[in-house]
Length: 201
Ligand SMILES: N[C@@H](CCC(=O)N[C@@H](CS)C(=O)NCC(=O)O)C(=O)O
Image 1 (spheres, protein in one colour):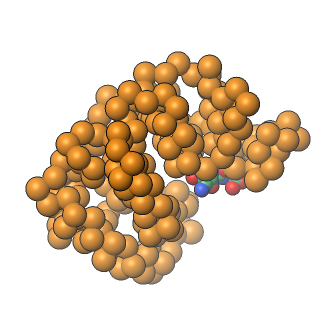
Image 2: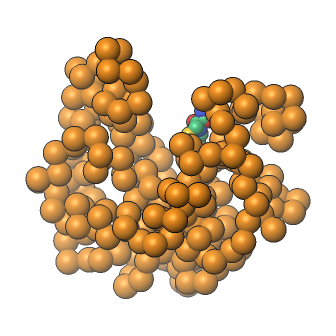
């Protein structure tokens, strides 16, 4: 059974969402990274980067939440991993887009508008990140015109990986008025049972 390290206030939630979608039973070690539990010698032996999440699945020990999700979708496939080679390539493309193009900005916005104590927040930084994010959101918004999913006609790991990176825009006052297709798709993905369950676990 796979084991996932990281608590509900970490990117481990992304992997738990994938495990729930796949219907795979798993063990959970709810390391509290804010309390420094990710810096113990035992954990660093498992993941020398000292970050969460880490997945242990038999001989496979790996980090990077989105890469873990690609691995899980491929290994425990129940339709989450696209069936054609071309669509698998698209799933990887969208995942890398999320990590490289979107996440640096969504994280800055979340830190400056949500995670920092109110008196330490820097709205100018958040605004600059929102401006950098805007053309990326416009790009995915126009792609989602007339589509319910990023690839084909069913929910895949591409939807999950991109949605878990973008989900914070729904709760950090990012203006989604110019992006109605994105807002519709993001709300539909974020309200899936497997996602809601992951947030509670
Ligand atoms: N790109 C990595 C980022 C991992 C990451 O930064 N995790 C945070 C928690 S969500 C963490 O471990 N922070 C504690 C630290 O950096 O010491 C991933 O997606 O897994």
